[in-house]
Every structure is written in structure tokens, then in C-alpha cells.
Image (tube, rainbow, N blue to C red; front, side, top):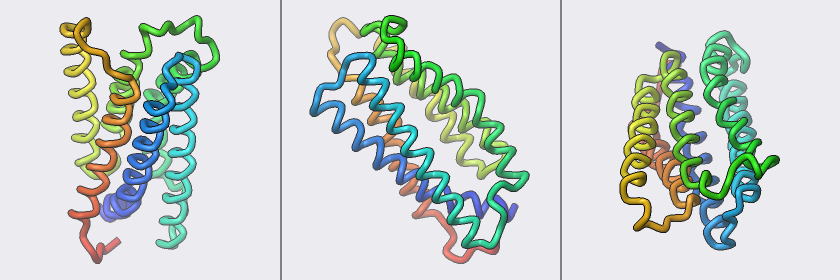
Length: 192
């Protein structure tokens, strides 16, 4: 149980970092109209890489501050649970960036939903080793990705949305909201 408090302390700043990077990437994508498959994939894969490095540094700093080993058995279990769906998402991103003929312009709109769906699966898997709220956060991603994609499939001819806006919602807005929630509900003097 005390490990859950440690993960929760590191999770809030990681979620806020991911949210800020997601909103920044959305702004860059929309302002500069980076809509080709190659550039879209490169922008979001680059953003994901920045978030991964930042999350690693935040978690490592938290482990050092708590005088604990960084690569502990619980950390390995969380990493192993995250890897399959995140690897699948990375492959989609690499294919869209390096092999643009593989992914057409028409595929760019569903790509944020596929990424969100895979990310939700990763969060849900990690939730078995982390605070329970991360499982619900994963279900939120899964439900929203499936729901919005289903609605878009029905009304798509009438809509002209930038896929960057969907990425901003999923990987910017939701992370910011969850990070704020974690900060507001965090116990100020945890035992762990």
C-alpha cells in the first residue's frame, strides 16, 4: 500500500508534464498546419519521446528523494505492463513517420483514437500495480476513444476537425485534468 502513495506522488507531476507537452504540440500542429502523415507522426512521436524522458527524470528524482532504488521490482512490473500497448502505438507512429505510403492522409484522423485506445489499455494494465484511479483513467481513454470514433464515423462527412485537436484533447487536456486532480487529492504528509 505504501508503494501506491509513492507512485501517486510521482504521477501528478508526470501527468502535468504530459499535459503541457500535449497542449504545446497541439498548438504547434494547428498553427503551422502540420497535417501530412510524416510530419504529424514526427511531431507526436517527438512529443511522446520528450514526455517519456521527462517522466523518467521525474520518477528517478522521486526515487532518489525517497532514498529508494529506481528500478525496483514494482517499477519493473509497471513497465512490463505498459510495454505491449505502448509498443504497438510506437509502431503505428514509426510507420506513419517513416513510411508515409503505409498510412494515407485518410488514416491520420483515426490515428489519435488508436493511440488513445492503446494508451488506455496501457494505463489499465499498469493500474493493477498502481493506484486504482489509474485503471479508471485508462477506462476513460478506452471509452472516449471508442465513443468519439464511433460518433465521428456516423457524422464525419459534415465535420472538418484537425487530428491535432483530438491529440490535444486526449494527450493534453486529459493529462492536465488528471494531474490537477492528483495534486488536489494528494495527502500532504504520506506515510511512504
